[in-house]
Amino acid sequence: EHLHLTHNVFWGSRSVLAYADGCSRMTKAVAYGFKFKIYQLIQQGIHDPQAFLNTLHAQGWKIIHLRRQNVLRQVLSNFVIERRGQAHLMVGKQLDPNLFPFRVDPHAALFMLEDRIRLLKEESEVLRDLPYLEIVYERDLAAVAARAASLNRVLDFLGLSQQPLSTKLQRVSSDNIRDMVENYDELQAEVVARGHQHFLD
Image (tube, rainbow, N blue to C red; front, top):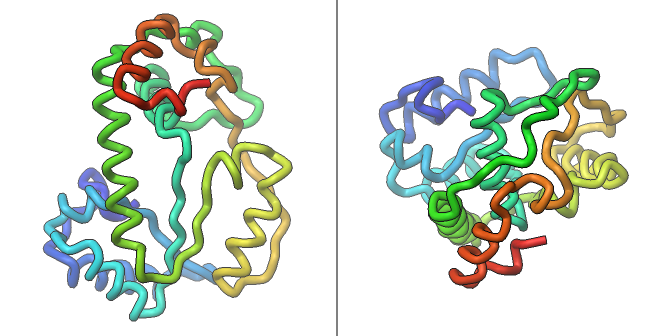
């Protein structure tokens, strides 16, 4: 995630593009890629995300758009990361039995939810005229049975040979939001009041 300010600080799009190009040339891997988010472009002084992506595409980079359908669950995942102090749980490691359920500030959750909805709209607009591969978490990654086919779609899109699928990570969150959130009724009321009830279980 090169454009995260805690990792690197750039001076506009030319600096970012030069850095990414240099990284891709230095790697010994068959393929090289990096992740970024639109708000990170703005933070790095790149105020025309569409022009930036157009330049990436013109230089031969391929774009994969990874997104969530259930933005509320994405927001709750951020709360889980904050509580745990880390994002990933390795296979074989035990999850803290006291992690769930936890209290959520409904107003903070709704602010984050609506900000993510806004960012998704911006992403769709920026990608509108570009070829890209869309990977949707709920459709392509959440179910273990769907992952191998999704990986092969990505490899085909990148022009790479198919590979066996493996992971060292295990899922942290529950299937049911009620199991995660102690004050679910409060959160539900706020979500419904703002017209986002389709994100609830």
